[in-house]
Amino acid sequence: MAAVIARERLRRPEAQPETVALPVSEKRWVIGLYRMLTALSAWLLIGAHVLRPSFKPLGLPITFYYAVGVIAFCAKVRGNKVFARTPLDYAFVLWLGLAVVSQLWASQVLNRVMMADDILNYLGIILTNWFMFRAAFALCCVDPRTATGAFLKAILFFLGFACIVGILQGYGPGPTKAWATSFGVQNGAAGAVTAMQLDLSSPRPLALFSGPNYFGFMNLVAMCCIIGMTVAQGRSMSSKSVWAAAFGIALFMIGTLVAQSRAAIATSLLLFCYFLYLMLMTGRTKVFVTGVIAIGCVLVGGLYFVQKMDMTYLENTFNKKIQDDDSFKERQRGIDALMNQAIDLAPLGGGWDSRGYSIDRSGDVWSRTNSIDNGYLQAYINHGIPGVVHLLFFFGSLWYGLRLAKRHNYLHIRTLRIVGGLLLVTYMVYSLTGTRHAKLETGIYWMIIFGLLYGSVYGEKFFGEPYRRARNLPVAA
Image 1 (cartoon, helix red, strand yellow):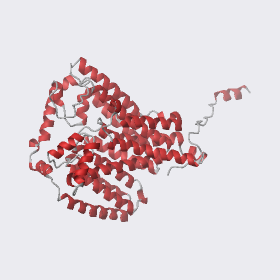
Image 2: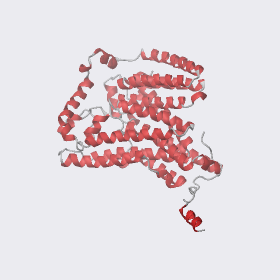
Image 3: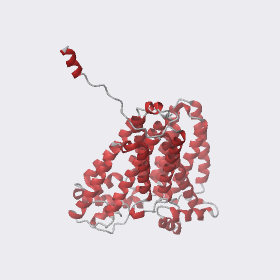
């Protein structure tokens, strides 16, 4: 009898199922209301970022306040599960710490002349990116399929609209060119620069962004979304979706050529070839042949349009030696200055300078590395060796999310995994020719995609299929 009692004491207690308060009402109209609010939140966040980037109440972008409101709404619906920690959250905390410490090191040790609002602007960039990630995560906890579809469609819609505006700015017929330019001046991220480009008769339009290179990069983001949404369908991919993808990719490739961004053009060609490869790997010969025909027809039309373009900038690039290229010379000057300052910048860097991404080097001695146009070197300039380590950790936390997504084969998670993988590679490669992760204008997009990815994976953990079926809630596809 004593032995039986001893065994009962040593036996591990049975694991109790996690008790999760019902966050979503079983009433169908309430579920429909939450779905509608989820979709509206996604469209509002992307629309405000593309169309109202310069509206900054109290020095912070309007999207920051929208993201805070979205997180509060989702917390009301789903509870504290929307605040689940991810590896990317630790990366953001480290980034905030580096931002503060590096600014102090630069001002106190390097005696750098810092602008009064440098640290506030930098913290605004980091916090807005972080809160956009958390907003996408939270919306996925409410309804992952609705949030994923709404965000991807909103990104394609607004970036497609911006691409059309950019094309019209350069080659719009009749009054459409004047309208597109006026719209870019009033609503773009850098209206004054758009007006200056017009005065200089530049062949490189800006669309709604800060520069032609940004315009080209945004087209790459849209292409990644199109490829992911199409290829994720696998063997169920239809000919209609292939034709739609072909027209979409062609539109954004034309926009990239109009922007005449050399790095973006090269990357878009790689994405295009990878898209054909992924279609071939689906194993459906009919779909692959249809895709080749569709893309070929659309590209022929695009080439006809390209023949009427002013390709002066690209022609000068190929006619000159790389040593004679003006942009190469400016970057070389920045790299030479970095070689001289590398030892002093190694501990914690020189802090973040509001003019660090511009070609303005008229400040103190540390401003000679401005506009170096390399994300990895810029991380070293801002935060020294810890900055480069942090950037690698940042990439690693995103890659970890892709690994977690392999455990699930739902369509929305599969789509996000492909889109996220393409964006991660695109950002890592493009960082060799420009800083994209630490700029609010470009950094938000992959934060949203990976917020959706982490939110979908964690949502399956907290509110997965058994949870939804037990309450007769919608089941993921």
